[in-house]
Amino acid sequence: AWVAKNVLSRKIPGDFVECACYKGTSARIICDYVDFANTNKNYYLYDLFEHDDSMVHHAMPDHGITLFDRVKKRFESFSNVIVTKGFVPQILDEISPENISFLHIDLNNAPAEVGALDRLFDRLSAGGILILDDYGWRAYREQKLAEDIWLAARGYEVLELPTGQGLVIK
Ligand SMILES: C[S@@+](CC[C@H](N)C(=O)[O-])C[C@H]1O[C@@H](n2cnc3c(N)ncnc32)[C@H](O)[C@@H]1O
Image (cartoon, rainbow, N blue to C red):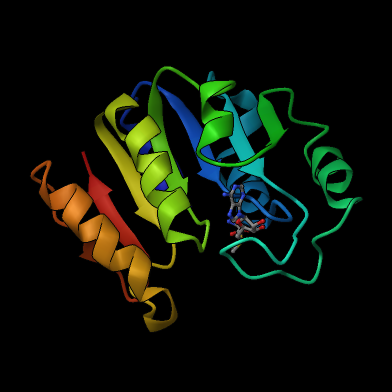
């Protein structure tokens, strides 16, 4: 919520992106907090919404065939929120914004998180902010290790927040 408010008040160009949104809870809190419907930005939300055992990440209780429709309904009053069902990172080649001010990555899946960085980090505007949701949590160590290498190669170091989230200001 702080990041959303911050990039809006600093007028950082670009849309908001969340990979992935699950039930849309974080995104809905942010939309309400910053009155997102009355901004000139779009909010791109991605998820698979369903789970099978071949996937690297773990299942969550609300995964299933109805979740995509439930999340779309949750955002029906926001014409500038685009909910897309698909596999990150490949789905980003089909639908994703050219410019980003807030990039929230929360896939619990190291290869997919690095794939999202590969596709989207270059589109983050100067002054835009990246949040790596589970960066500091030991259960998701693989993500942190991969992301540290990826970002260090581009001259960035992640600030770990007390929440366990990682923050990078471009
Ligand atoms: C922790 S949840 C996201 C929670 C959400 N960011 C929030 O704060 O409300 C992680 C989600 O990542 C999704 N996910 C994992 N790997 C994925 C992939 N490769 N493509 C799309 N979604 C993926 C899962 O389906 C799951 O719903």
